[in-house]
View 1: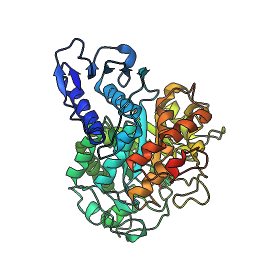
View 2 (view 1 turned 90 degrees about the vertical axis):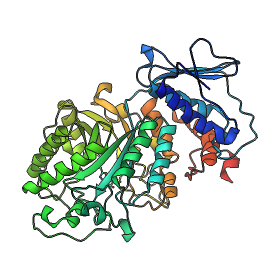
View 3 (view 1 turned 45 degrees about the vertical axis):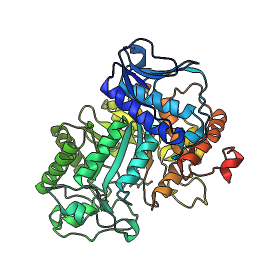
View 4 (view 1 turned 30 degrees about the horizontal axis):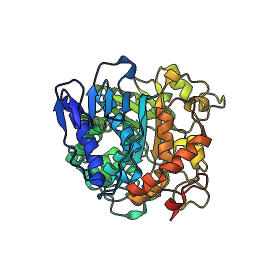
Length: 475
Ligand code: NGO
């Protein structure tokens, strides 16, 4: 493997690629820096070059009889070229022990770049806790499908999952349980920073969410002074929503928020902080707007951009805010939040629950998942386009698409995999590929052909009856 001119970021991608290819091939695959010029026959070359047509994330991949060349204008593009190359090898490339091969690649010339800048995956670690190893695995899956945002729901009614040094009881007490009463857990600051770095090495921006002013029972239980009554409620292990609220007119609420956001901002390399803002049914509407405007200013003062669920558009938004649509339906209803957001020039992240919520059941008899937004079979998750879902929006109003995995019913990584697969690759394709040329009839065949890869990766996936899975993958 040759890296032209030895650019350090490109060398990093080469090491990642050899890390994927070595276990199954058993080849040593040394990474060498070249001075430039044509690489020797039989080599695989990564090269960064000026090419305005490729943008920040585009790439070219050429597989010829003599050599393989990956090129891009930026390191992220090289990483996506490497992910595509990985998928061109036979599925056994994903196994962790040496396989017989042969390691044949098709001859191709690919030029590829994404449609949307925001291609997200959201994991709720508050309802059920996921260990750093589980989260790394899910980051790997997101990276495999060229997603570039990993949104981590760190605080909700049932748990607070990040150590905050200025308010230590949040994690120590507020993180001590989860839905169903299990032991919960939290990330230390160094574990969290390591997750952010792990994501960044895969060109994924970690987006932490601290949900407020509702969904805050874990914080309210940890510090009595955050409650209007001055009394702390007990920890909560059920699945209801909309019953908790920070105390909007106590100044300590904003000291708390600024301390928390300050620590989270300092630990987070990416530019975004998600403030939640959904389902604040226990906060009076005017108080909600007051709170959100202060929260926006606090996030901005800590040098970050605010992201919020669509409800945040009820108040004035700081420039650059991103609004994550999840439940509004466009049918001309008065005051739909996506239009309010558009009017404020906020860009939208599309996560319509009936398409993009990975925690919805596939079918009535699905063993996991919720059903409040309907059943979301594999076809429902794939066979749509963000713009046709929201006719009032123009392409430029959309930052992108995010698939959300809420964890009320999830107790393990295998459970998370079952709901994410095979819907996640379809949502990732919607976020990356142009609308033209996508069709369910063709996609279902490609998805079926992809199943041996899920098997080789050890992914626990739903064998949807809508997909013609190869017989050997059903054993
Ligand atoms: C809603 C709710 C979450 C639930 C989720 C379950 C949003 C933005 N708030 O989505 O608290 O976990 O549904 O599907």
